[in-house]
Length: 129
Ligand SMILES: [Zn+2]
Ligand SMILES: [Zn+2]
Image 1 (tube, rainbow, N blue to C red):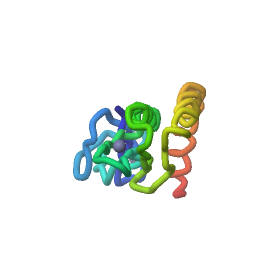
Image 2: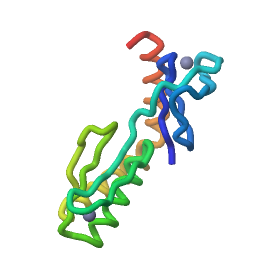
Image 3: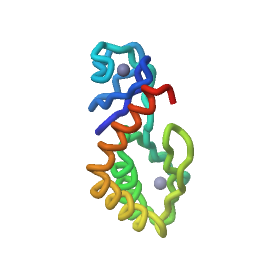
C-alpha cells in the first residue's frame, strides 16, 4: 500500500507505511530531511448498510476492488468511496463493476504518465502553487 505524505516544504513523498505528523522524511527535491504534516490523498470506503469500513492509502484500485468484493457478497449494500474524507462516489452492485474496470485501466495506462504528473506537480509546488 502506498501513502502520500505532505511535508512542511509542501513537497510530497510516498511511503509504504502511514507514518505521519512529526516524523522526518527525506525530501529529494530539497535534499534535506523535512517534517511530515499529514497524509494526503487517502482513499477510504465505508458501507452504508453494515459496519464494513477501511482505508487504503493512496490506492484507489485497492479501495474499489475491496468494495467490489464486499458488494458481490452483499449485492443490496452500497458503499461510500472517499478521498481525504470527501465523498467521491457511491458504489453499489450495479456500478461497481464498471468503476473497477475504469480504475484498473487508469492504473495500467497511467503508470508512466503518473510519474510525469508527479514531477509536474512538484514543479508547481516549487513555484509556489
Ligand atoms: Zn521538499
Ligand atoms: Zn455492507
